Amino acid sequence: MPSAQTRSAKGNLVQVLRQKSVWRELWLSVKRAHKDRRARRRLGFVSLWAGLLLLFLVAGVAYLAVLIGTGSIFFAPFVIPVLWWIRRRSKRDFEPMSIAPQAAAINAHADAARDAAARSWLADLMLVYAVLVDRAGSERFLKEKELPPNVEVTSRRAHMEVLRSAGLWERMALKDRDVVMMPDGAWAWEQINRYATGIEPLRLLRWILRIDFRLPTVGQQLSGDFGIAHEIVVDPERIRRGNQLIDTETVRTSRDDAHTTLFRCYAEAISRGYQEAHDEQTADWAKGITEELAGNQDEDFLLGDNLVSEASREQLGWATALANIRTDFLSMVLELLETGQPPDECPASIFAEEDESVPEPQ
Image (spheres, rainbow, N blue to C red):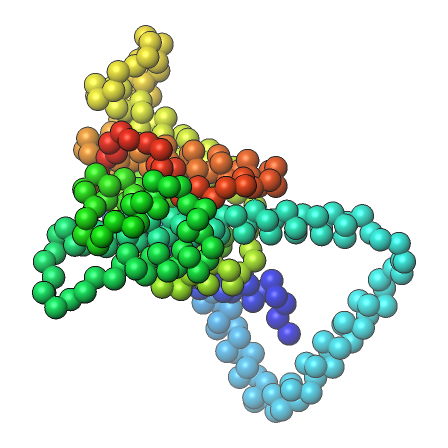
């Protein structure tokens, strides 16, 4: 009988394979294999696992053929339950008896309670983000498309109902509540672009709460997808069905990767003259980084299909913004997971009190 962990691992693998980013990155590796060692290593790794999977499949088919050929297949339904029962009984017989509360059990209970509190707070935050991003997507659609006169847009009404049903309407930042209450089609482009940047925190939250089990690098997530918000809005209970939560070390690693990407993009922007260095030492650092990585197909960071040194100004600016958002957001999540003390309030978005313009999402 497969364990819960085994079933979970299989489910996670299926979900990862369903993500478009997996196949997009695989195709990018195929296109870059002739000039990029990293792409060749990835393809080699994929080929190894594909070969092992094929080998196990062939071995399983061969073993099944032997069972059928010898007639042993007819005894399998009786033998397997007996073996499982013997194994379980043996394991139970060797467990030590104790009537005292175990320290490990007490600590595990405390950790579970702390994780549950953190997950609940992050789930609330995720739903708020999903509503704001979905509304931005709706407003963008209304700006770009002309609807027939008999079509009624109900995004505003649906979003308010979702937030009220979850008990989040009164807990939102006042500015964001006012924005949601605006009539459908009334958002300005500045508001649409501002709240559309919430796509990045939202996909981070989906990964943190294990709705998605894979987080591509910043360079492979330059394009936004309003669909990840809409599917949460139409099925908000999806957030609460699971109880899994990302571990702190994985968050820390992803935060550090985003921070490194931010430094690389910042150095490139300084070297090109898009940004001014704070001092001469920073300018020298940026020059050294760009000279070392410029055109280096094996080492320079990728932004989509291009190296950072080959990216357009728009690509570079958007990647810098995303890397900054990811670094800050994961730093907040890391502090929450380490302290186990979620804030009392549920902020609507990290842009609630800001007024400066933001780059347009790509």
